[in-house]
Structures are given as C-alpha cells and as structure tokens.
Image (tube, rainbow over all chains, first blue to last red; front, side, top):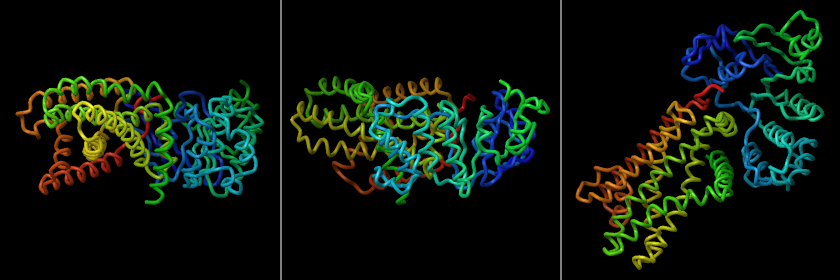
Length: 233
Length: 241
C-alpha cells in the first residue's frame, strides 16, 4: 500500500490536508503514524484505504485489494445491555464465520491471555465493564481478524499501560501474517515496538521517517522538534 | 454464498438485538405507525371488508415506505458517526451490512403487519390467517423492492443533521401519497407509487401472468440498482471530524 506524490484538499477548503506525501506501508511490520491534531493522520488512512470523498486529490494511491483490511476506530459503540458473550459472538462470529461461538470453541483458537480475559468477562454485561475493559475487549476481539492489513486508530487510548503492553505483544506475534498501520498520539506505544517504522506527520507533510529504535534514541535529543514535543509533554 | 449467509445471520442477530432491547424505541417504532393506521381502519368499518382493505392498504404502503427509508437511514447515521468504515471491513462486503439492516426493519414490519391483521380480523371478521398471510406476502414483495431503491439515500452526501430533514421530507411525501391514494380511488393504480403494495396485494389475491412479470422486472431492476449503488457508496462520513 502506497501513496505517491499524493495531495488532498477537502471540499470547501483551500489548505492541503495532505501535501505531496510519499508514504509506503512496510509489509509484515508495525507502521506508526504520529502527529499533532489536524496534521492529516486520518486523511492519510482514508487515502490509503480509498475512503476519501468529494475533495481534490492528486497523485497515485495503491490501496488494499478486495476489502482485505480491517479498520478499527478509536472506540466502537456496542450494545451495552447484552453480555460480553454476545459481543464476542458478533465480532468473532464474523472472523471465524460461525454463529455458534462459545468458550469451548475458542479454547484452541485464541491466545491464552485473550481467552483468560474473555472467560473473566464472558457473563458480564458489556456496560458493566469499565471504559478501559470495553476498549480492551474490542481490541482483543478485532485483533483476531485474519485480514492482511489492520488499521488501528489510537489503540492505546483508555487502556492502562500494562494492558497496552499485552496488546502490542499480541500485535507483534501476528506480524508474520499481517501488517499494521497504527495512528497514535502516545510515544510510549512506539517504545514497545523498536522494530517498527515511524512516520511523523505535520501540516499534511511527512516531516520525518525513522525506525522505532531511532525514534526512541532521539526522542529527547531536540534534533527533531516534533518528536521532542511529543515525548516531553 | 455460505460466507455471506453466515455473516448476514451474525449481523442480523446482533442488530435485531440492538433494536429490540431498547423498549421505548421498539414501542415507538411499532406502535406509532399503527396509531396512524387504526383510525383509518375504524372509519372504514361501515363499508365491506374489501372496500375497507382498499382504504387501509395505502396506509400499510406508507408503513412499508417508512421502514424501507429507515433501514437505509440507519446506515447513513452509522456512516456519519464514522463507524460504517469499521463495520464494512469486518465483513466481506458492504451488502452484508445493508441487507442485515433491511432484514431488521423487515422483522419489525412483520410484527406491525401481525398487529394490523389482528385489528382487521376483529373489526371485519376476516380470517386472521388469510389476512395476515396475504398482507405478509404482499408487504414482503413490496418492502424488498423499496428497500433496494431507497439505498440511494446512502449515496447522498448528507450529514447527520441533514439526514433528519431528508427523512422528514421522505416521510411527508409518503404520507401525502398514502393520503391521496386512499382518497382518490378513481385514479389509475400506476399514478401513485404507494399503490405498489396494492398492486402486489392484488397479484396475490388474483394472480395474473402479465402483472407478475411486471413485478419480477421491478424486483430485478431494484437488485441491479442496489448493486450499482453499493459499488458507488463511500463509507466515510461527509463531515470531517
């Protein structure tokens, strides 16, 4: 998936949301996109997944084929009055294409950590979970998807750092089969994946591209003011 | 096809639960259209059962119009909230999602038809099985054609606020059509789109080959329209947010 000299202006706006961006998603890796609010992160995702509308676009896009990607928003509102088992059946039912999912079915199909979390919340109502647990449940379930390309919009929001680590462990274990594009505001996420590829976006331009480890090494060096700001505040 | 069916069952089950667990909304969705139809039923009691049915059929047509509009408005609402993008990628095709929404509102419609049939059976001493059976088949035939055509709503570049207005306009037009259809019987059937239900109803009560072919052509055309629309649909919200 790639953007070549890609520019995009929203309808009724004059400023470029993306300005001659050249961006390539590295396959079977974690690709972070980091940048301040309004820097064009969501537009970049929409452009890559061929979801832009009405605006003026220039350049070339090589998008996903045959809908073979999963887009996970920051937080998907789900029906609170049903039990987590129902939520699991809804999401994993579509992943495993089986409408009769129970814990026994999942026993050998899921990672031990995910399974133990599901066992703990299985009979609870979804709105009895805390905000963080709701988000964690969604992430654990959506991350079971077999799609080749996964887009995660701020996956670490609402979740405590211990659980963020577990989520990223899960992501790293899936890198042989899948590619991840992760939009984040939290530099601590990058520290968890030193092998990742990091792109810093500002005012519609990619101002820096580096590996995760380089990012970690230079985050307080003031060489790159954007990275310094993210790490400092 | 097996994948599509599996995904459809899962989506339908979940969204039906979403619809039915909100009791206030469920009551409102089912009872409001009924409250609009029942006065028409009671004013028609003085005439024979056939004439009375002719009077209420346009109002049932209105109900079907409303459900077909709402099924597609639900999709637009989710698009504007930014979640359609995610739902689309969870399944193999966007049609799984749109058809599941259509089925949810079809299920609601079946309950409405059952309640209307009960009222009709009591008021006109009609066999409940006959009235429910014929109305159910006629409404099914009508609903899926309309639900497919009303998918054009998903194509419209409207935000959540504009959607409310568009819905009101559509409901108002449907209401006017139902009102005029029930008042001006001398006008030909084709002069009013809400009479599509009347057309389907007559097709069941007294089947004839030519109208049947006409219906099948309308159904096929609606499927083609739906397929074209789903190819063109953009799942991103209109408003940047």
